[in-house]
Length: 199
Image (cartoon, rainbow, N blue to C red; front, top):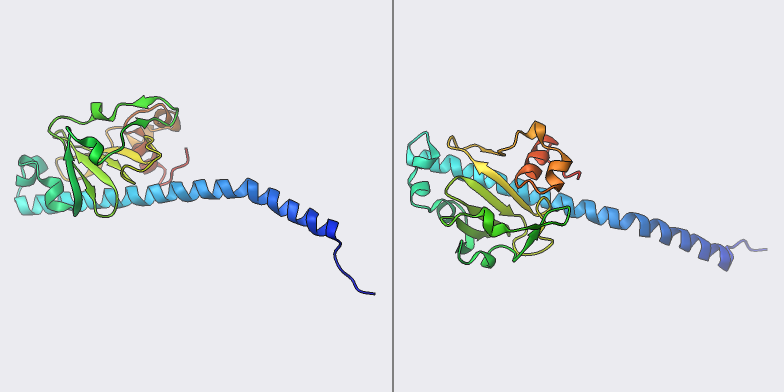
């Protein structure tokens, strides 16, 4: 007598495997996507920090805003390998047409970019914009979706000493402040949580 599984047993086993896969695969994909956003954000953060250090060294001044690159508006084109440049008049060449916050409200990206902004798409795939007041806006995957503040769009500030920070104290950044659409709260929360996107 030979031992074997019946067709019913095989079908029940396959059904259980299918149900477990259907429940876990979306979570795995979402976690993978969030991690890829964090990786790109961290790369942009690192490259901005390195560019600021280089500008300070070349400018021979302790204040970033006094460096030639900042005074002439060439910081991005001088220190980043860009594939396309744009300004406040043609932002949609570098960034998405429209953005939303995590809670679904519409974000008018153009409202956050001053007329003197210098923007570009960097060779590694992210879009970056620097306004005259030192605000850096990064879309970690360029014009591609989801175009959501706190998922692929982040803002931080380039300080006069060359450091990069959030205007919000990272210790005060909460998931609520991020999901409510505070423009740099998501970056502050990610910094506070040790480069984790858990909202």
